[in-house]
Length: 427
Image (spheres, rainbow, N blue to C red):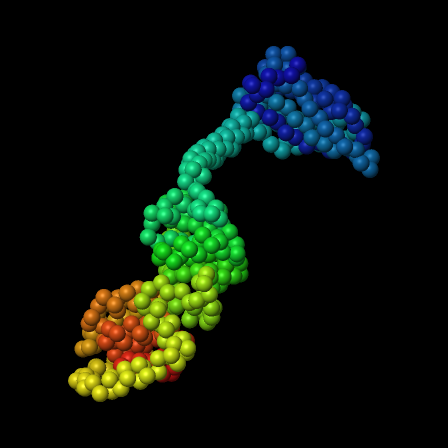
C-alpha cells in the first residue's frame, strides 16, 4: 500500500552497503524480517503499512566489484518521535540475504518544510512574473498611446514631403534632424517644430525654410551626423548647431539628453571656428546668402571684390576716422585674466566686466553676442571659446575694450578699439 502523498509528514532516507550482490527484494525482506517484533505491536511495519501510516519502501541499488550499495527511502505519516524510532530500527539490520550489510540513516526530512519552501519559491516566481507582465502591459499601453499620437502628429511637409512636426510653419524657430525616427522621438517629448532632411542630399524645402526661420541643426554624434551637418552648413542658412552625445543617435536618446543637447547648442560661427570647418555658402542664384545685418557686415568685409569696387569710399571713411578727435579713455583696471580663463576652462562660460573691473554676469558662451548687444556697460569679456570675426565686430560696435578667449579664429579684420588676448598670452 502506498501512502497518500498529501498526508506524508516525514521521509526516512538511509544508505545501505552490502558485502555481496543483493537485490531490492532482499533489502525489503530484511527490513520487514529484522524489525518484526522489535518495536512492539504499535510500530509493527506490516500493520503500519496496512493502516497507511507508512508508505512503500523504495530501494535503489548498484552492484560493483562484488559489492552492493544504494539508498532506502520510506515515507511516513507517524509523528516525529515514532518516525525517528522507525529510522533507528533500520540501523539495527546487519544482514541482507546471505550478505553482511550496514544501514545508516542519513536524514529524516520534514516533508512539510520542503513542501512549504517549494510553495514559497514558486509563489515568488509567480509574483515576479505578474509584476513583470503588469509593468510591460503598463508600458505598452503608454507607448502605444504615445506612438499613435506621434504617428497622427507627424506630417509630410513641402514639395519634397519631408517628415515634420505639426508646428513647423507656425513656429519662428525650427529644428532640423536627420530622419523620420528622429522626428518621432522629438515629438514623443513635445517638440513639434522639427523637420527631417532624410540624408546628405538636403531637400530644397528645408533650404528655403532656413532662410525664413531661426534654425538649429540637431544631428547624431557619429560620422554620419557630421557629414549631414557639413552639408547643411554649406547649402542652408543655419544659426545653431546641437549634437547628440558621441556615438549616440537622436532617435534613441531620452528626453534628458535631448533637452541638454538643445540647451547647449552652439552658434554657427562659433562651431565652425571650434572645429575649423570651412564651407562655401551659396544661395540658389549662386550668390552669398544674407540672413541678418551682422552676417551681411561680416561677409562684406571678407569680399575683396567689393573692396576693390569702393577703395575711394573706404579711404575717405578711414581718413574721417583719423581726423575725428576722440576723448582719451580711462585705463582699465588690471585683472588676472589668465587665472579667470583657467577657472572657466571647459565650462563654455563667459564672464563680463564693466569699466571698473566689476563682474556684471556669467553666462553660457552661446548667449554672449546677444548679451553684448543689449548690455551697454560691458567693457571686458573673458570666455571659454574662440574669438570670431562676428564677435569682434559686435564688441567694437558696443565699445567693448577687451576680449579674452582660448584662441582667435578666422579673423580678417582686427578692430583697433578692442584689445585681444588668448590663452597663449598667459602661458
